[in-house]
Amino acid sequence: MVTLPDASVTESRHIGEYTQTTGALIREYVWLGWEPIAVIECGAIAFVRTDHIGRPVFATNATGVKVWTVADGWPATGKRRPPHP
Image 1 (cartoon, helix red, strand yellow):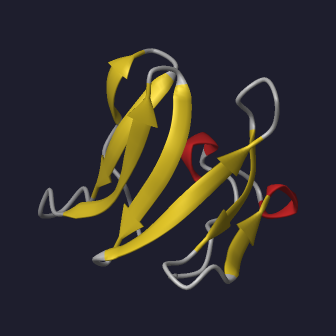
Image 2 (tube, rainbow, N blue to C red):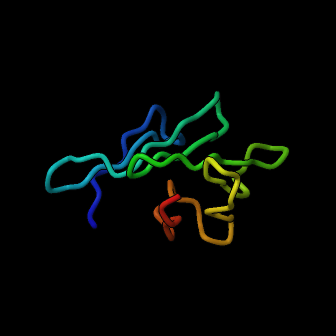
């Protein structure tokens, strides 16, 4: 999957990724100020839990099951992607 350059509010807050061929949305990032609070992908929401300085640590689905941990890499950095929640 190829993505267009990330859409962002500022240089450090990614708000979305889109396919290069059609411009279709791949995933959106939801922020509360400077703290990421959710990732929406394929209609599913992963709720991001952060540490005391706002760094993502893990994410859960709507039922509270962990779907991503920091060891998986943060999606907004282009590292490994979390599984679909």
